[in-house]
Length: 361
Image (cartoon, helix red, strand yellow):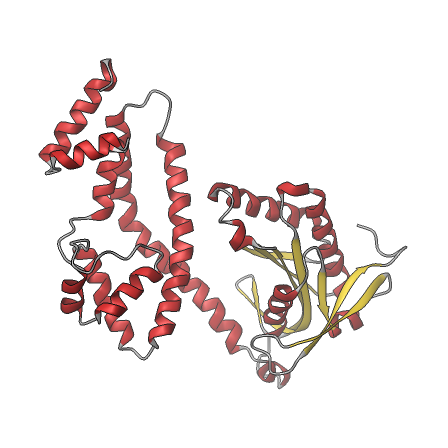
């Protein structure tokens, strides 16, 4: 037990937790594991475990095996089916899964959605933890004050987080629907009167997902911020940075050359950053697209994204249309025809570099 004011703060925290129903054994474990200051936050986040997996399965109508598989898909450990490890919130969530399961989505499809959301939200949770630590863990703060600040912040923050996550997910789903809805056939037939011929390009960090397993989450955020800064710095007018999507940046230009110069400059600039910054890869495509609310939708956007996904590290890959539209000053090498997801025919691709005496940064 610490002495002086820290002792008083710990005793106060212990008394309040005991009054809230925390057992003596749980308090002892929290002290031994040096997590007493986080016990109130844990209680806010955990709720009161009162059901076993078997009981949750019975009450929700979800098969036990699928309930446990869904739990694993979120990235959480699978508890013993007879351990009281589930709360009222867990039961409510399981009932939602049961409803979604009966909506026509396949079992494996629903598990895949759960896996992807679990991975993304695990990163989000780590960012929240990191931000909270920087906010509340100041020099000289007592165990009691830290515990109460964390618990109060979580109580105020969590109810607002659900609607915010739903809003962000809705916006991303809207973007995917808009891209899918504007087909090449519609654009070619003139059904979309606002269609414009543009060149779209993406650049993304190679191995960003794997990178997340090796570095702190706040470092990943710094990489994204640095990438955006470099993208803005090297964008060649009339090329415009449209948006940043996690590990990637998207550009649009009415002409091929300024976009190619932008991407070549950006890839080279990131290489000059050294080992602290992972390599980039980039892809470019051209065609008819539609602008809505500052974003762009249509086949060239989808194609540029797919081309980027198959580009080599530190390279820029382009479609034939981009190669044919580019001016002199580039060296092109055949990268073969690739079958890209969402496109019926194989797409001929070309790696582009600056030719000696070509356009300068």
